[in-house]
Image 1 (cartoon, one colour):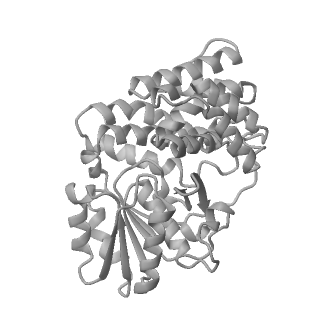
Image 2 (cartoon, rainbow, N blue to C red; image 1 turned 90 degrees about the horizontal axis):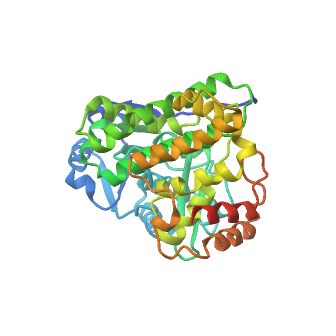
Length: 386
């Protein structure tokens, strides 16, 4: 196991009564920018519950953060913060709203000239406005971590950012919101959380036994509950486990002491930027083919994964590993998730060349857990995904 440091200051308030505690957690002198997306929170009752809790606070609302939050939109919120002397942000939404609000929180106190430098130059955010979140769509785990992904429409870039100042101060998680989430978004949440775990687990053995078991417990739970979440009537126990899996998948615990990959995400972001394919679906397109392309790197952990998650007991390491890939694709198909790029867009030709050029332009020449995934590898993986 590798040396590590673990830090996560986010307070999580989980359960059916979570929203009733919002007012108690916000400082009495807070002047709040309340951020949200397209208005679904006004249809499912979340907005009314949050506004009720904000009585007595000065609140300015900022609506319209996109499913892939854009630098252009978020910059408008930064202007409002500076003009109105906002000192607190409350993000009400899913991963995109919370990610976007993290950018807003960091950009509001950024001392440079161009706030896009934060993701573009990989600047660690050490100073930001305090941010609280009300999670309405379990998926990304952003409610309990310090990372975010932002899109720049003008440049066609989709880049990650992060820093210790971007951990939410407190996040409110009520599993009852699952009742109003469309099936498409439920699938996205399952795949997103599942892939987050895979990126931290399907690498190579390094003696981190407990970390492996943490990861496997989330994977096993998601496989068990996925069809119930997506296809069966609402059940609180299932919803609660789903939401908690999504949070635990990317809150900084699983990656401690172990090698991690994340190349699937880096490739997948380019597919979203090109075709506006849902983020989670780009992951489903890429990771089975990345596994096949980097089979020798990953076969030991794939074999372990196949045994512990899907019960694959017989065969050589190679055979177990290959069967694990097949079983994972079967699982995705069982919840009606497609795994080929051509199933999402008719304009897929040339995508592999584009991704290779982008990786070369960013000097992304040593990705993956072994730092050996090159732009040529990215080209091959995307080509396989057609």
